[in-house]
Length: 133
Image 1 (tube, one colour):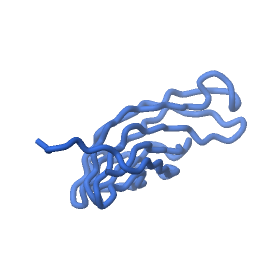
Image 2 (cartoon, one colour):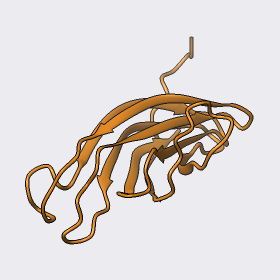
Image 3 (cartoon, helix red, strand yellow):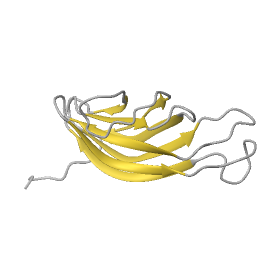
């Protein structure tokens, strides 16, 4: 146990657009986008917000956004978020997916949080909030 508690010294928000389809679930292949990278002093990702990217008049189709932990050599699937199908125009009920997921994921230096989606039809902005120790 540490002699003194560690607190986040620097708040940080980092994000990426996920627009390429990746149906793989094994972590050894596919296209994933890096959302957050651990600082030299270590980091903590407290939460992730997922916001669909849709054009006016476009229908959001059912999809899954996946969050991955990458340690520099291996990739692990840590969370799958279901995105419900919607209809109509932007602003209508269930059209724009906007979800916040609590993670509290510690990252050592160079480790990353990555994101992917099964379909490329929708596209998502994935934004992580946390900080560096």
